[in-house]
Length: 242
Image (cartoon, rainbow, N blue to C red; front, side):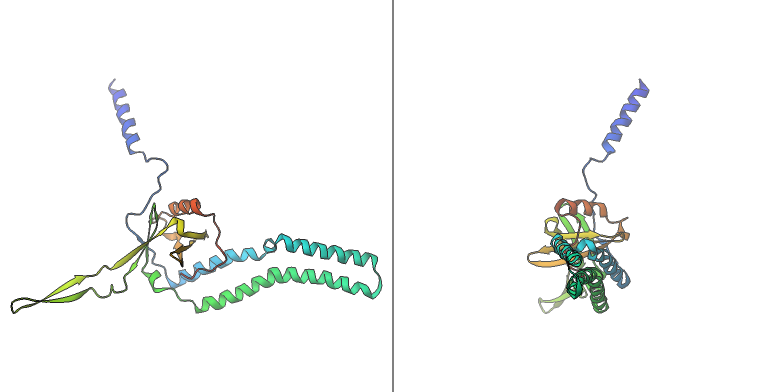
């Protein structure tokens, strides 16, 4: 009987300590990103490399394939039934299709790589990212960054009494916070090392890079679950700069 009571107590305590299903872990305090210039550039490169995969044959639309198929069919038919110098036109049609495919894939990728390298050379990591902290809550992503006047520890207020002057230091919050609702997310994507989030709040567009190295302190899985509830994975045709 004593053993059965003990087992019942253990089972009850186990049930009480078990976490309810369906709950996501959240942050009690925002976590510092501590992103460096090198890591910021690495994030930009990894995002470009992932998006560059879209410049292959898969990027050609169905209408383009239909037009090219019709052009090739006409060119082949012309080569079969027409003789002499008139076949030059049909050869030009075939060469034109090949050139279009090359320009549409490799040419576009080369152009985007050149523009990206030019933009990356002029890009500097925003100052707010160096000291930014991120948190995760049920209602959205919490961004915490130093206040513009945080360098001034306080403002001196002078009050006059009976022949006395006293100074009082006004405390200024060192950080200011903003919550980006999950519903404000316009698109998002991730690589092996980073997560990229695009959002729009009150007509203002913004972006956020989350390095996955902070996974031990920051619940990346919770962010992913909330993002999947509002948007499918995949960035829009825009490059994030912050």
